[in-house]
Amino acid sequence: MSTSNYSDLLPNLFRLEFSKMTAVLCRHFGLKHIELAEDIAGDAFLKASEYWPVHGIPDNPTGWLYTVAKNKARDYLKHTAIFEQKVRDAIKTDEAEPEVEFSDQSIHDSQLAMIFAVCNPVIPQSAQICLALQVLCGFGVEEIAGAFLAKPETIKKRLQRARAQLRNVNFSITVPQQTGPRLDAVLKTLYLLFNEGYFSKTHDRLIRKDLCMEAMRLTHLLSGTPAADALMALFCYQSSRLDARTDDEGQTVLFDEQDKSLWDQSLIDRGNSYLVNAFTGDTVSTYHLEAAIAYWHTTADNSQKWPHILSLYDQLLTLAYSPITALNRTFAFAKVHGHAAAIPAAEKLGLDQMGTYHQLLGFLYTGLQPGKAIHHYQKAIELSASKEERQNLERLQAAASV
Image 1: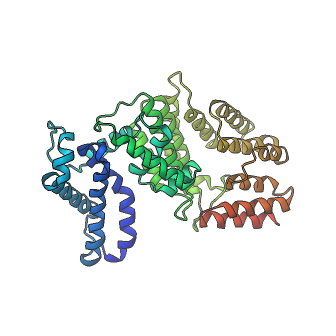
Image 2: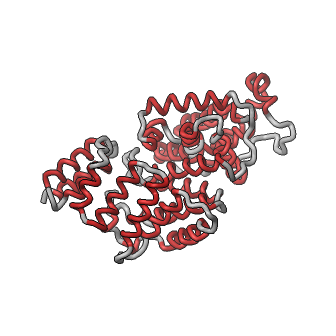
Image 3: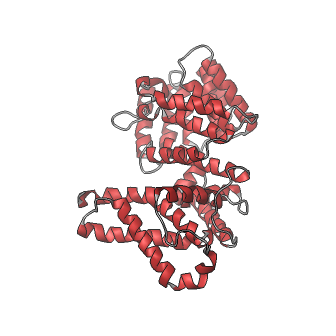
């Protein structure tokens, strides 16, 4: 591997491996020393940024980073004053492994344990999710703010408070219990992670498959509970259409225009299997309803498809109202009752600061009132932070004016 790939490789590795390193190190140090774990992981990447441009990228860059992190952790454990004064008592004396071990199994167990540890009931659930997205999934403050539709300053303060609260809790990361209130926060975190990948508003990319796949990988670890199986079914259905959602130039392909031969049938089949398992219990969560909606999207058009989807949206809003769900329900309403009937229902939502609200109105007004369609597409363009999304909206705006 040449140094020419350096500028692309290291950021990608940071996204994929930093949180794994942090999770493993936290498992040794205890969550109260998360900053120390992050410092060691960060030092490994800093060394790579200094060493690789001069000496070239190693054949196994990931292994190189883990080796550096392992050595730095060992140095800390043996020689630093931080270890002597603050960490020693927090480390279990009966640990089977005296050194940090970055094996696949260790990373797997540590990440799963980490996310349950971060989702601690001592901090509010919204803060749990923010912190998990940051320390486990590698999200930046801007990305988390986008996922929560909140201001970055708000998220930054929320993260600071959450970290301070966890520092005051004297516990170590242990093997997680896959039940109880923490599972709800964990699944919500994974749901947001997948959505950031599926509807990415950052990095000028409409889809980030790496985030989708990471969310699926972590959710699979939790399968066996009705909510986790339902969420996994939803992810499988959504992921089955990833290759069809953009064209060769990276532009969005609308659902009705997608080449269905590009849909991944094996993922649809996996989704069906997970969905059947999800309904074996007596609990119906929002994930069950969303997965059922996604299931109907994978079926061929027929007279019952959209009435079923609209009915599921009605149930979903009753179970947990959200502006996004209400907006999506309006699209299904338009499919059943027509665009003209759906416009008042959409405008009633009054989501003027939301780009997708104006995009939907642009879609509904197209063919009925071109002037209003153009106006709403323009508002959506102004509210978009993604270059790729703006280009797609401009294409739709141009089509609406014909």
